[in-house]
Image (cartoon, rainbow, N blue to C red; front, side):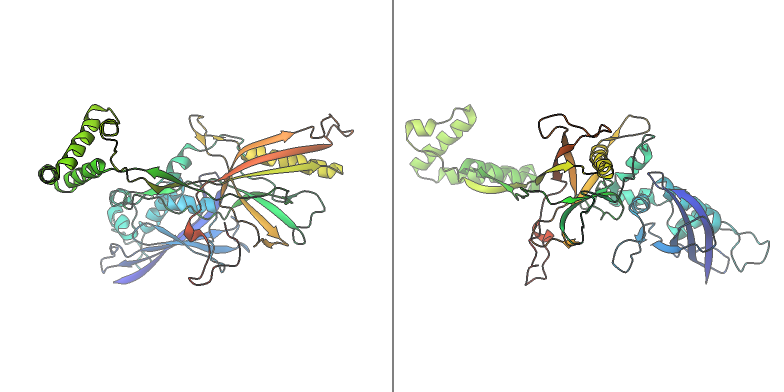
Length: 443
């Protein structure tokens, strides 16, 4: 067998949001003496070109793929994926148009005469041997074996309506003279909403992809009245003896079938038959309550009740809300424009996104919020998980009277925002090394 190297020339591709990218592939594959590809022997290395011009372009390897057909993202020196978020999503979705086009070009290149083969000799590799070598066309097997169900496939397929805004200003700072590296500030990064994937094998959802593509940024002074409230839901849950017996019978039936459930019922009857007359009378009264739906029979006749075994049990986490209020007063024409851009930034960013057919609505953009102390994460204030902006209120006359500048701009505005985190806070979200917790407050 001999190793072959096949180049897939640089071509233009589009991600799900329409972003144009120039990508190329290098395929390494084993071929036998007859030039047939060895199944499962091919690997692909995907490279991203920063321009369509060959001269002085920057080329970065972004992902590799083996015969399992799954792209593995390459990371930079800081541990972040080299590929942007849109490219990550398109590569993760085997049915994306980008993946379909990549696979077609790989097939075409692998179907051409192999390097090192005599000129004019026909490449006798079939589409099946190409697919077996590189892992193209294994979607059905992957799905049946429990591969994640990626909602990004549907999201990408339906597209977005013309005029949808996916890029916002990244330098909106109010007031103009605010110095984020010298003062304490709050930063709002807008990002595209990324749905989780569901695995049929684990019956659980994957971790949300880390956002690497920020599509807009606003920096403001930290407002007054900031706070957070972590909460979980606990509730009182009873389980009396009759309910516990029912659970035993149901569990026996589920795990062992009808015969085992019948045996469990017989055992309960024998236990009741061997009990004292008082306990038998109590059992009869309890089952009479269950059968008739009339409560309080034992309490009325004997002044007793079946012990409910009431206990406070954990039932669910909660999602933290955050409210911020800012008063924005312009002191110059340029600052007035910044204020208008900030209001537009949040209003448009929180709005639902229509698809091309207008049959569906996509989730609005979401936000990363961060308190900063002289340009670094504030260790004495709470962190945030990714948030959705649920409401955005603007008061155009916060002073109680209508007042404008000569150009019609309002003298001041007051904005009130209500955010809520997309995910609950979990114990393992807090950074620690096993012995000493991190010195910051965390979430």
